[in-house]
Length: 375
Image 1 (cartoon, rainbow, N blue to C red):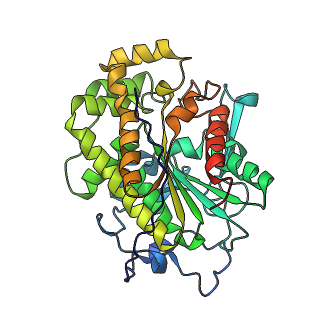
Image 2: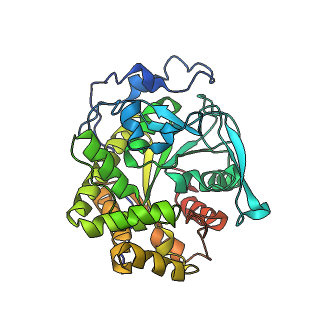
């Protein structure tokens, strides 16, 4: 039985009086956008100094490559950024085969600021702006218009004035990256920030980044999981199984991973408060916790890497614990575990265990209930 906190509360924390100059690189890729109004402020002027983390930039390019192998690919779909560490390249598009998708393919496209959006993102707002942060589950292994951010935008606009929902999801990232991406784009001044914490691997990711930033030894994934990820299931194992294997091998890492994630979330919430944005933290479960169309393969994977279903259950437990801690501090939270368990599945692709089109639609519906009435 997984705890499912869904307590919603909001509290505005006191802003610090001082403003830190992070780095000129924090201005990000805003060259294609029109100049902001004089009172808008640049990201460096809007950002508060971090309290429980070192001031960015946290890693140089070489250091970031150790956590994000995608940065080693020249002219790949991702590139280094001093604040977010890794971002999607702007104005890039391609189509790749994906048998489970309608038409057997998926089209990938980024806009002028590197968001998974078809239209440009301008600094000037025209109505309410919602920024959605997260990893590949948020970015979406779907066409741009099918991501839950864009489905939410369409449904909100049907109910009232047009609303801009920006898909800020970036594959292979975690909570520290979500904070960094917000710092990079504070000048967009979102009215609402949705932070999608993926139960399946965000906690292990946060621990890896935290250990790197603090100069501690980063423990590798257990050998069996590493080997199976290379040779048999490179797409499925990273979606919850590898993280569970880490915590099975070292139970003390569970609380440390939660603490690292909570630190990044708290810092992000402080930055949201500074620009008077409403922030909502989501906990998104993984396929093994929702779908049962692939149980036989999952059983084989579990046996191969030496863990059990009970070990995998720690992922959703961590998501629930995170939301409970944030809710206790007055933050707004939404646990998607009970929501998705009630939805019509399957909600994840079998090929790579990412949310499928129905899964994105289900997440959008849950957010519509929260955001449909405005602030």
